[in-house]
Image (cartoon, rainbow, N blue to C red):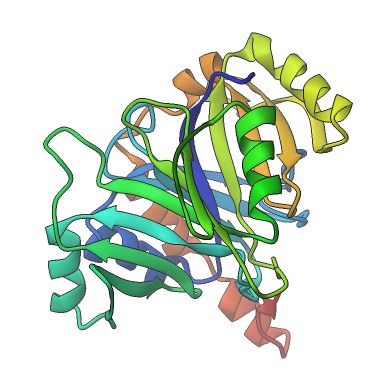
Amino acid sequence: MVSGRALHFVLKVGDRPATTKFFRDILGMKILRHEEFEEGCKATCNGPYDGKWSKTMVGYGPEDSHFVVELTYNYGVSTYRVGNDFLGLTIHSRSAVAGARRAGWPLRQQGDLLVTEAPGGYPVLLRDQDAPAGHDPVRRWSLACSDLERSVAYWGQTLGMAVEERAAGRALLSFGGDQARLELVASSAPLDRAAAFGRSAFAVPTAELAEAEARVRAQGGVVLTPLVTLETPGKANVSVVILADPDGHEICLVGAEGFAELSQVDTEADALLQKAIEADKSDQWFAKKGGKKTEA
């Protein structure tokens, strides 16, 4: 079994300024890291795209103690078609609710939660109540599944997550401790991952990665990217294995040791992001060519 810790969920974004404003200025998250890349990732971290892209990590604290969001931006892609696979990020924060109301961001009541959307159409569920002191405000991320029993067996038995709660049509799983929970929700409609599909990432001891890949293969599971080492110039290298669950939800198992070094908060991250946004002339470039950014 994998001994892991939930790290982040990846969202593809087409509008960096608006997305940054939402997560930083409305939800109150911090810009933890920002990196620019000249070509696509060999583990398809930015999706099936080969060109220039960037990665921005946002959250309420360091990734070694918080569940964060990876905002992936592919230059030249303005929007992504959103499917019904990602059901939302649940956050407990009075200040986030106040920020949304102050900005006039649309909120819809759903039980004891307020539902809104990040730019690009990604659901965010807010509870007007703070998490306990010292706890991460991000409490869970939710994915739809076509067969709940099959999905629980995969995430629980194959990957080793503990099933913490079961209710009609849903299950809550985790690797334990104070970390975000994965919620699996049975869908009555056919799953459509569309072009905006994300990826769940977990830190795993590097020595366990090959064993995890072998176990998934032995059980007939899907390995999208076999064990590979990713290089980040000037920073730590990390080993990863990319899997897909029975519904195609992507899972990144990343070597914990290298990632612990790579994921350190960069105090210059906000400035680096703003510099990249200001230098991004892709709208002007496409306009000059008589076109516009593409839609995926």
